[in-house]
Amino acid sequence: MKFKYFCEELDGIAKLDIGSRGVIHGLYPAARLVAGAPLTEALSDWLSRSIGPTLLVTGFRVLPLMVQETDGPPGVAVLAKVVSEILERRVVVAVEEPSVEILKSCLESVSVDAQVSELPVSEGLEHLARELFDSWGFGCVVFVEKAGCNDVGVYHNMMGVDVSRHHAKAEAILHEAKRRGVGVFAIGDGGNEVGMGLIRRAVELYVPRAKRCGCPCGRGIASCSKADLVLVASTSNIGCYALAAAISARAGVKLVHSAEDEFRLIKAALEAGAVDGMTGRREMRVDGVPVKVTASIVEVLAHMTSSYLDKTRATGSKPSDL
Ligand SMILES: [Zn+2]
Image (cartoon, rainbow, N blue to C red; front, top):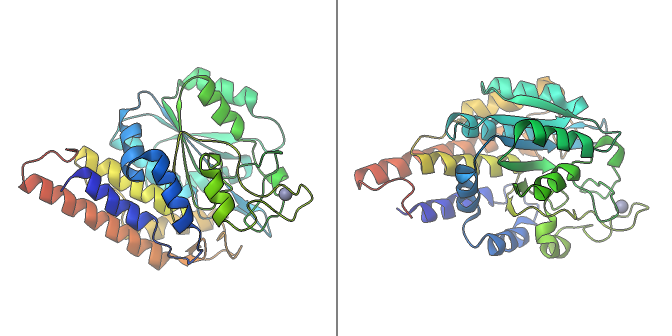
């Protein structure tokens, strides 16, 4: 089986609308058109070929308590593990200051060693972005479910509420990366995340409140910043898991994430204070989807990766043969 076809199937899992949100069917074709290939293939290719440390940025805080949601940090933890252990890159992860313990708990739960950088919410990030790039020399940056602003600088949740004062102005990191010619990738599920401006027309067509938020800014929730490539999925975590499967298969190794890990990861996030992004409650869900369902999807991804590796070994072809 060609790697491209395998990634086609991984994309199929990533874009399965398990929460019936009704937006991924519109966002996926737009992202796919830009990538010109299955999204997991395109991103795994870029990440595998990049040189130097990788920066992963996440953080979306939700009502009513304005704490970090369960979508984001678990995906970052799995991606960090794959990037550090399989691609052998040093990894730096960044999140809003109040969410640091949640991200650290996720990293610990999958035993990944990554440097954690705290993003302040009350000041510009231009200086910090320059410092991070100067000291690490990143080869690529991946934003995962990272709250992004619209074209007048306002950050919104999916309901159109202005949540600007609770979020880091992370676009400064994207701009610094672009200024230095570093690849910028984004994983998201709603169109209001950093980087999703790349498929803005699709976001405006398919995402409720994309053009009219209902908040006093009146400019909609669609993110204005553009990544070089975006991976859209039913939840950002699942987008990360599918990408992790592609990176693993490409390198000829099994997926490091399992259903048991998934339960442990979400539990670790909740115990450190995270909540479900849909209900705002501390429960074993991600964007409203029960963890037994997301764990089943992890199980499917892990099995697909193992099968792919078995088949390519049986036919004597290299896993990444195109
Ligand atoms: Zn607004």
